[in-house]
Image (cartoon, rainbow, N blue to C red; front, side, top):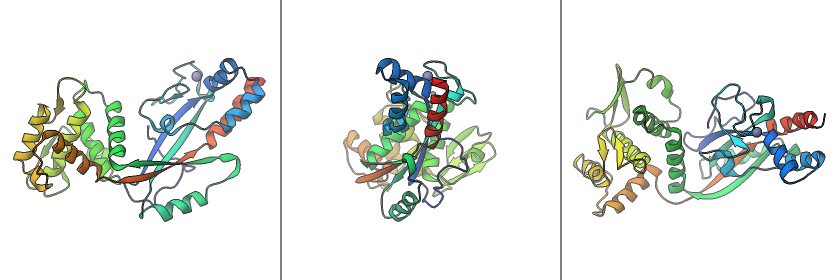
Length: 297
Ligand SMILES: [Zn+2]
């Protein structure tokens, strides 16, 4: 869902890694015009002014699975999956999500203050959330983007975890030509690339196992991880023997309570967080105009 940067995109460079996320989704204007004219029975002119005001929901803009009239495509010249309309009928929505808090509040206010105000080119949507929910949303998107039937997903899931920890690292370079990932007791923290192998400090390796377990546990029978197929109790036993649970101060005995603590750790704690979504509607407004001209002409 994320995409490459264009010069016209919002500059989020001042924000600390991990406090911002970016999403891109496409919308098919042929489908939208069809919905407003054929289904709602509006005249094209009325449809046009309604569509200009149209404001997608956060779920539509950032959810793991796009639904009509939205779609995600990796192709250069995609066709609408619903009505087959060509690219000139599509518009992209870029959305930035900023986590509220001391580290971002002043920067965010300044960023929003400087946005062009005319014609609602940008929308700002505030949502109350919490760290656990943010983590599970991330996990759901990850699960959706991975092909759990191909073994490569175990490495890709680990990469996603590392990207979450260190968003500024050029992970595509680190993962180029990588064949295996192993834990290394020589590392206290972080990672080290050696030949075609990537070594992870044991805590990160263990986090990767937990993420792999969580992503795949509902896929088939039990979770699949670098350490093979594990039930929850296998996973916990493994983490206990490696000293990981002790290091985190997890003393619970019940396996579901332990899992809850592990998730809390991965989520970066508990507590509520305000999320600010900045929706860039500029391309949408441009395209609606040109599509309308084509539609009536
Ligand atoms: Zn369409």
